[in-house]
Length: 216
Image (cartoon, rainbow, N blue to C red; front, side, top):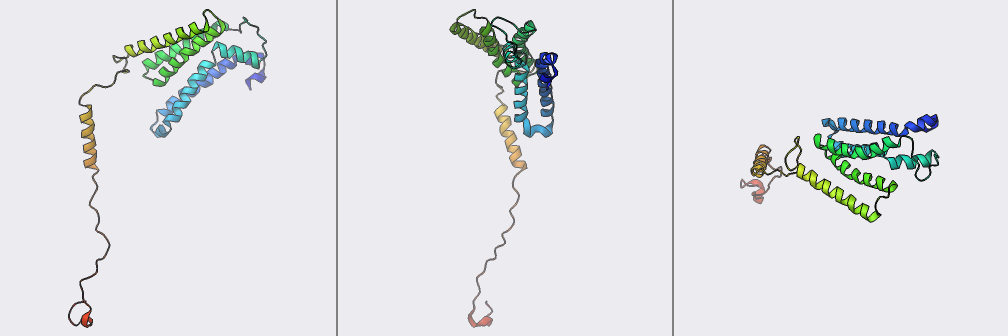
């Protein structure tokens, strides 16, 4: 719809997608906080991840340049940049880092993991337009950066930061607490007495004499 409004509308399409994406993300987070939405937790998580991805892709330099060239017939030649190229380059490099920072601050695994994945998108985008190194060298360096970043993040989160930690709980009494809780639940909800059966047991009488002997 926005494309049909003219050249100015075409320019704001990336920002329109950003707005829709962040609105969907905020809405999904708010809805997931309601107890009544607990059955849709996984669906809302998928919506959150997709919203974060579209929010980034809407401003990624590679996506904006190539889609604008294909959909809007900009006819850009090799080496030519799109309008506002500096903004989109900064956006491409900064947003994954912002995701990582907010993931740690807010104890949000979705933000954290999405940010880690999008670090590879930074390397791909820069390598696609600036062949500073051979492809194999760039891939190795990119893998080293991701590995070192993951290792540094794990080391950083070994000690709890803002209530968020990589370390597993080491409380030795945790298992005892769980067993005690299970015992209490089992005693509380113990099955009640079973009702007597409705089956009738026959036998013991005799039919001799038609009842004259006192037994039937």
